[in-house]
Image 1 (cartoon, one colour):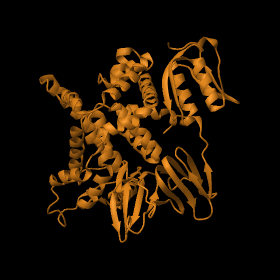
Image 2 (tube, chains in turn red, yellow):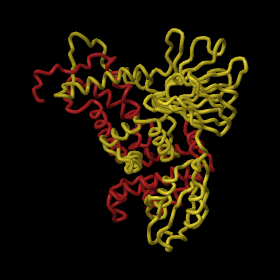
Image 3 (cartoon, chains in turn green, blue):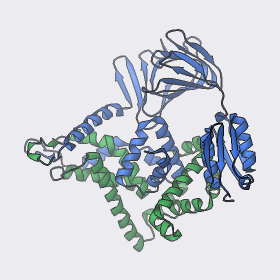
Image 4 (cartoon, helix red, strand yellow):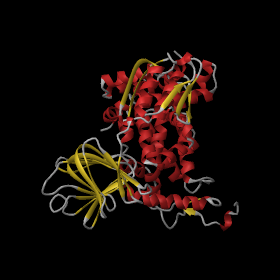
Length: 185
Length: 326
């Protein structure tokens, strides 16, 4: 396995090959990035920068896993770094990305009634389940932070979040077409 | 992915807690079926309901690539430069497969491709809406494609469907629309209908929302479906089965109903026996609304909400627990 001399190197020797790699994974990587950054512009920036790095360092990078795994790991690390940068920025400036993101919500046209339905459904979640969901979703707390605050295990947080999503999806199933309508062009 | 962990993994991913392996696991699961993808998208919409999801769902890959390309130093690259990814062992083959797969996907990525006499519209990972002609619209489900021949709308209205799509058809007596789903045909008689299938499925399902359609094959199976009716064509048996109207298409709305009342309603609707193990929980109160859900899904949600459990018995289900959370 380690006898690299016998191995023909995999060449990423033209822009077309790079473009294929880009086309295949760009969107899922942006989606993944968005889950950390909650800002589509930031999410795209991070992924684009990862691709640029991959290209620029293509003759230095020694990939031991699949390209896909490499890209996901790179995006993961880049997002965590970006979050740290944002946290630093937030320390010095009120005008942070996250604040901006929240402000953006007013731009998003969501029917008042629909929003109310979502809120109602969240409020009807079992007590602990609802509390955990709100802490994660609206309090932007990490699972570990929630677990520490409530004195429970991270596994319980994971379990309760899954449960919340399942209940909400079922409760709001009737409104899903409306929700999709309001969140897609 | 184990079914029981699906919701946990999705919520973990959406909450920004998933590691790269988990993110890839979820992506793989999404790609396994259109149902999985639809399930995920519903969760995503729900989770990000008040975020700016528009830009996310409408990521313009081509424009993004142009942006990245403009920052690359690929000009002049060639004979003097031999950049390589040094892959080891079997991974080089994995990478090669990735690129082969990429080339296939790139081919598919072009949502519309013209080949001689026909035009194909393909939906890769999100629904694609195609206006076929004035007032006739097809919404193509992910991993599905629709091909129309030259002369569509003039000499023919034949469309060939691979996968699933929803049609909203303006009927024309002279030129009725005909959907070819691989030697099985759905002919509109002024209607809105959905066709669901995939290459590895043995069934083609047709659900009529409005109007009437004729479902038939090239042998002798034929059935007319009216509004609200659905049928399943079984490819291996070359026969059509009219789907019975099951309680799962109904809406169940409970407002502070007792568990006893809920169970009575569901038992009657599904013609099954749902019992409650302990009297202590008969008066647990439930407020919930279910539309088009399977019985087990509803029981799952009900018991999770009330922090109870249920198990399947020989003749139905039994709900267990000593107390509820309300």
